[in-house]
Amino acid sequence: MSEEKSVILVTGGSGLVGQAIKTVVDEERKLDTERASKETWIFCSSKDGDLRDKAQTDALFDKYKPTHVIHLAAIVGGLFQNMSHNLEFFRENMAINDNVLHACFKNNVKKVVSCLSTCIFPDKITYPIDETMVHNGLPHPSNYGYSYAKRMVDILNRGYNSQHGCAFTSVIPCNVFGAHDNFSASAAHVVPALVRRMHDALGAGDPTFTVLGTGKPLRQFIYSLDLAKLMIWVLRNYNSVEPIILSVDEDDEVTISDVAEAIKKAYGYRGQIVYDTSKADGQFKKTASNKKLRSLYRDFTFTPFDEAIRETVAWFIQNRDHARL
Ligand code: NDP
Image 1 (cartoon, rainbow, N blue to C red):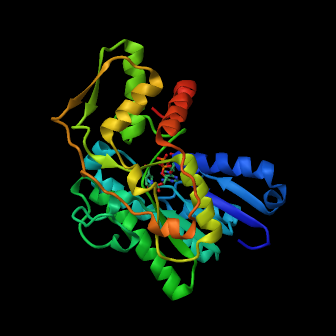
Image 2: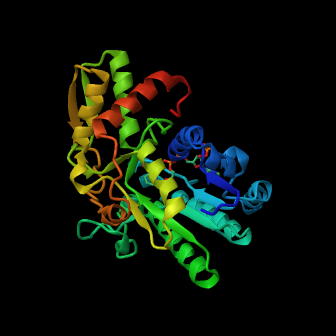
């Protein structure tokens, strides 16, 4: 980023990733006052403007006149929410992305970093997945609406880049978890869903804890604060339209059963974990390679999984009353 003053607008700033970026930025601003004096960060939620609506999106850009944008706002949900709302996930995310990226273009925003996801990659694919494979085949049927809308962000980025020279790029995070996640019983991703249900099981004194599915699928999980640091690094240092995967290493992949055990340990729950194998597992694995990230930022240290789970559980215990449930 340049020496001039920057206004960095974070869409989706009230969500899991947005609040993690805010935490990291707030810490950094205390340590680096010179940078802080040159950067204004604005974290927006849907209350500041519904980005599905073009006029409201344009009004938000008129108000803040951002020089840089981290575009996180999206309709996001877990497996079961996706399966029943593929049409809405497609239409609403398409509208949000088209409105935001076109507003960035019209306002001469210098750099935009948008968010794709490892779950949008083709279902039938060779492993490990890398950044060149985004468009190589059909996504998993459970989340085709979300996947196609996200894939179109890459198409928009390439169009604005090749026709207008815009520095619009995207990151591809693996599964994210941490403070400020959505802990709703019906819409949550697997980590917050299990945290919330373990919390409730403990409160109710249940002797067994049921995990939906076999517990066998493999996933890479990134702690929201680690993703936040990496996204800020991308905003400042990564200068290509090509997406970049932001994920823990392939060796750090864990099973859903490992996740349940880590949460059980964090809570000190003494009951038994059982698996409801009549429920869907989703894609068995989607191992992504972070080789590109490692080639550009070799020394980045990820928070160990158990430690990040402990911090997330501690946050939920402290904040359950005003968490998203
Ligand atoms: P959250 O669901 O936690 O937050 C979503 C954010 O988007 C909120 O700030 C929400 O505002 C905002 N938003 C939703 N709809 C609108 C709208 N119509 N207009 C304006 N703002 C809106 O999402 P995450 O933080 O988990 O995800 C951030 C990004 O990362 C997303 O693009 C997601 O696709 C991507 N991603 C997430 C992963 C994950 O595991 N969570 C994995 C990979 C990628 P409000 O609070 O007002 O509702």
